[in-house]
Length: 232
Ligand code: HPA
Image (cartoon, rainbow, N blue to C red; front, top):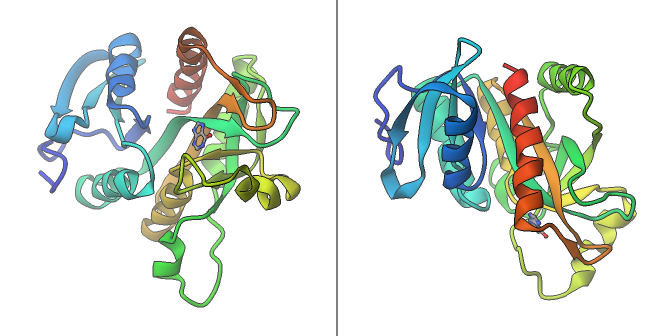
């Protein structure tokens, strides 16, 4: 039992998929896992453990934004001994060539958050995916015949910025898309020596002004969850 997760020791797998939305966590568990149990309902941030092809896997909602997600990342790693976290989330495209439903693997996560100032007051830390996990995801994507892009992404603190201009320097430096959690995941995973990767589906384009339908979001989540589970 940690402050925000009511699981008993041993109830959470060492490999965890983390969507932002707790109802997505429930959907992934019920759709892909066998022998599913729910280990957390605290604050409605549902967490489940089950088996994928006989191997134990957990799926835990993180909530939206770094402050919420970082609580769950930290407690899973520190209190429950989790060794691998794969975020499965959505993102807004910052480059014109990215289309709705495209899959992005986040090599690195730039951020507008103050998170790294707290740990690194004298410099800019570069939050980076775990290379072995990234390589596995690339191999599995190829085996599953899934196309993807990989590159730098932006983890922003604000979903509704005061002006669209805030994205200009990030776009001009090739940053692929914007979401709200990965920089914290990569930083805390590095701190505790565990593996982390973010898989993101483009749900909006901030270049083309397009938004996915609910049905499209569902389908793209299927691909992403399948790929993440095959990284087990
Ligand atoms: N901004 C931040 N996070 C997001 C977005 C966005 O436009 N779309 C999906 N996640």
